Length: 388
Image 1 (cartoon, one colour):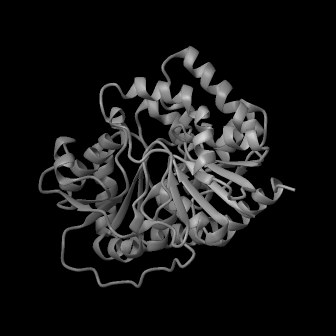
Image 2 (image 1 turned 90 degrees about the horizontal axis):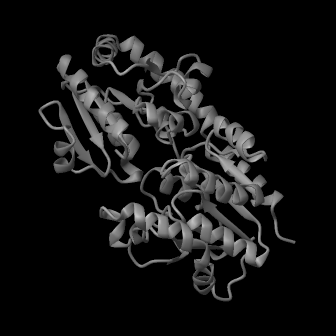
């Protein structure tokens, strides 16, 4: 089967949704795969799938996306994205397409859906976040988004949701069932070799993007709490030191570690951290998203066998996963720096607690986040929508 991916998330070996797509497609024969990346701009050529032909709907992200006019630009894209199906057809040219894969974020899913509909091709829709409801501009906009996204969701040959709760919510909202495709590890993933803990302050590490006010607040709380026990917070990701300072994430208790190559991530974090921080926003207007989405970093976090500290509401998806697996994570479920400091103090003092939590989460992750089971789910979905 010849697969065409069209979406705003770049397909590259980097982080989060992009890494999810890279892992999902890396086993597909390169000559039977085409990638057309959307309005957020192209991926980094050094991190792309080897041998796969890439193209882009736009050469670089439009500058308006980073100005005060971004909401207006987003509204305009909602209207025109479907009409870009002809541009997608030009990128594909005469290459035979058997099925189209897209991710329901930003606006390129509209382009992919229009292209698939015009050609009578099966569309396979991956949904990581409740994106249609994350940038609403009022009740009329919500109704319009539900109508537009719902039509595509119902028409798709397969619907692959990041969590069971998302699949259930969307089934009630849009009237059709979806499958669950959770985050998963790389095909060559292995538990990093244990290392002797060096003589350094207790280190809590966070790896990921800081993309919402709730996440910024959670990291500030973590920095304050870890300082109370004489430890430090180590942040890995695209956040620069100057950005961290502007967010209130400066001071001696915070170290900005920058990006780590995906191949080195597990060994690096296992060697430099004593525990891992998993924030799920406690801000009231972000908690609906916390219930439906699922933190992709949990797939790799659990592989390290380090204890994981969850700072999030009791009904978030990560808390539900933890409870289903014998309280695999250490929970702090209210925005309380003192409680966060107490949890960190317990981890710092008790190596047996760290080992028990790390092993419990690791065993659950070994079962739930395997590359093999994810590929089986994806291939079964493609089989249901295979072109004749």
